[in-house]
Length: 444
Image 1 (cartoon, rainbow, N blue to C red):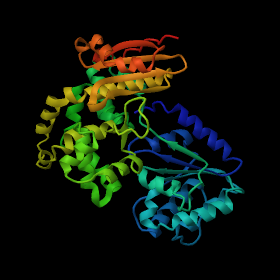
Image 2: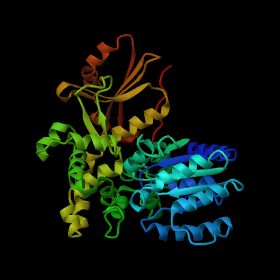
Image 3: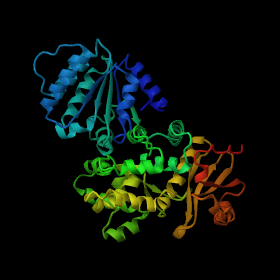
Image 4: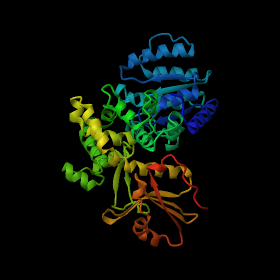
């Protein structure tokens, strides 16, 4: 797959590289697995890098592997046997006094399992050498909770040491649209929407779809539910390590949220247990869910829903994990048929999400969200506000354009209008047919 997008990240990494020519720079790159961190780094630095992948093995064996790579890539000779990473890191920092280079440590959080003292040892070496060396140190990690702990917990030795941070996100909706338009110019909007849901803009999934030419809804389903598919076990493989021994409770909560049980009370009534702590960790430690409040609601408002941030995880928990009994007996056709049957209902909320993302990309609005009143009354799909221009867009989103009723929308919005007297209001309807079409310019 060719390299798409990431112009901002590339420019930022190039800028950091230039800064490292004067004094050492430490950059952390965080992003979920498969999002394209390694590809970004290789694109940014090409062959001018020393790339070391921290695999789960004994520290001495890891150092042996790293020593071989260092000698080959940097053209140096290391004498004697190095069994501790701290000694290898100090050697590299010393080398960077005379030879500037980029050092990349991928899956950096794995040192927690290998030898957690590595972090304090690195801190001491970094503090001693950083001002007299010229190393561009890139530390990548894909387990969000662990990387956050390593660098943002005040008790941890590497707290405050990083000069730069990049949180790599999936491709934007515009980039995903450009990919589909390039590879399948005659696409139907439903194919773009399913591509958006199944891949969520995650680079590896996009690559798999492109390589298999799975660009229509049916082709995408065939790829996902193939007996050798990566997607079947993907959610389990990515999240069990994050959640540890309590993963079954976390999975149950995520499955319910993906099935539209989005309030804490709904989840607790089904699971018959208090889930407040789990929801808090899913939001703040793991960054997998987020709270949704009605737009304009105060931070402490009790009118709260939860949603899974990642599109693919939404799909995986709704259809694959929920039907894991059929998956266990390898009846993939059964699950594929259920997905086909229920997908038209499931995709509606992602059509809303698509248009919210498109509106964000315009840069025209100070606030964008949804609206509902007590008891989920008078729900409005999209409310977007420009405070400076005193302008508000109120929109209804439906798969079928024939079901959009702007008269009813205006009735539901009465309280919003009372709250924003003097604002210029636009009422709009967005449907599946509008997917991929340019949004009309908003009035000045």
